[in-house]
Image (cartoon, rainbow, N blue to C red; front, side, top):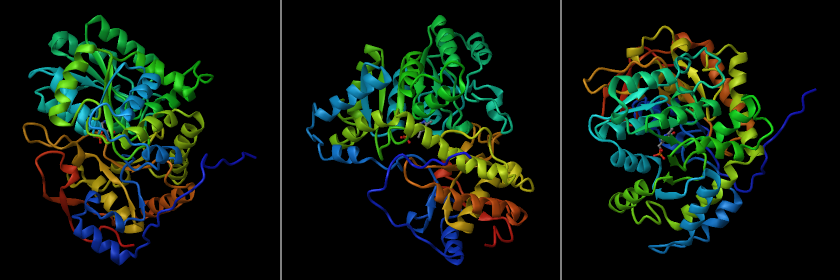
Length: 463
Ligand SMILES: *Cc1c(COP(=O)(O)O)cnc(C)c1O
C-alpha cells in the first residue's frame, strides 16, 4: 500500500469562501465580459487565477510583519532581505522593487539600447513588454519541445543553444545585452530548466560577452525538479541546487509574489557593481530609496523570511506534489493537459479540449469562462488573448492555447483539488456545448487583463 501524505503545516487562521449558484455565476461572468480577471473575488469559490501574491504566509512571517522598521532610509528589514538574498541566491547587490515588473523595468532601461535583441526561453508578458518599451526585440530560444503540449521532455524549459548561436551569428553579440533565462518557464507550463543547460548557457554567453539575467520568479520550484529528475542531484538539498543554478547567472529579477511566499514585493539582484549603481540611481525615480524600493519595512521582513522557507525540501516536495495530484486526476480521466505537469499550475490544452473552436474565437478564454460558470473555480487564459498582437497589429496565434489552473502556495487542501478535478472532468464530458467568444473591447497593451468578450452564440455552458 502506498501511504498517503498530507500538508506539512496546520491551519491557524481561516478565511470563509463563497458558495454560489449557477444562475448567480451566469450573471457574474456576463458582467465580467467573460474575462475571469474582471470577476469580483467575492464571487469566486476556489481561486486558481494565479499563484502571484496569493500565498499564505507562515506564523513566522506574520511575526516578522510586527517587526517592520518603517524608517525612510536604512531600514533594518532591508538588511535582513539583503542577507537572505546573499545567502540563498548568492548575489551581492539587491535593489527592492514593488514587484517583479519593477525590477524588469529597471534592468530593461539600464541594459537595453534601441535595436537590441534579447533572447529568452519563452516570452513572459511583462518581461517582453518592458524589453520592447526599451527598444529591444525579444527572440524565443526555448527548445521546440516547450511548444509541444504532448512532449514529455523532463526539462522543457531548456534553452536551445543552437538558436542562441544562430542569433549571435545573425545580429552580433554586441546587439545582445543579455540572455533572459526563466526558471521555471511560466508560459511553457511551469516547466523546469536543467542545471546542465544553465551551465551550458552560461559558458556560451560568457564566451561572447553576453550576460545571463535570470527571471528567478520560480527558482526554488525549478531546483526541486532538478533534485527529482537530473542525474546525480537527488542527494542534494534544493537550497544547494538553487545556489549552483544561480551561480551560472549574472543577476536576476524576482517577483517575490511567487516563490518568496509573500503577497507583494520583488527585487533586482546583480553581481555587477556598475549595474547596481545604475539601478540604485534609477529606483529613486520610479520606486523609492534603494533601501526600500517600492516596499514597506514589514513587507521586506516577510519576504526575507519567506526566502528561507521557500527552499525547504519538505515544503517543496508537498507543493509540487499537490499540483501533480490535481494533474494526475485529470490525466486519468483523459482530459488533455500539458505534460509533464509543471511546478505551479496545471495547464489544460484548450485546443485539444475544444477542438471544435478555432483559435481566432479564443477557445482558452471560453473554457476559463465555462469552468467558472460550472463550479465557481476561477482560472486564466494563457493563449491567443494573452499573447496579444505584434507591432504590425496581427495576432500572435501561439502554438499553446491553454487554461491555467494555478495553485496558490499553502492555501488550498487536496480536497479543494478534488472539487476542481470533478468540475473539469464534467465539463470535458460536455465540451461540445461550449462555444467560442468574440472580443468586444480590446485595450492596447497586456490585453488579457481587461479585454471584454461576448459568446459567439448559444450557451457557453449550461450547468
Ligand atoms: C509574475 C511574473 C513576473 C512579473 O512579476 P510581478 O511581481 O507580477 O510584477 C515576471 N516573470 C514571471 C515568470 C512571472 O511569473
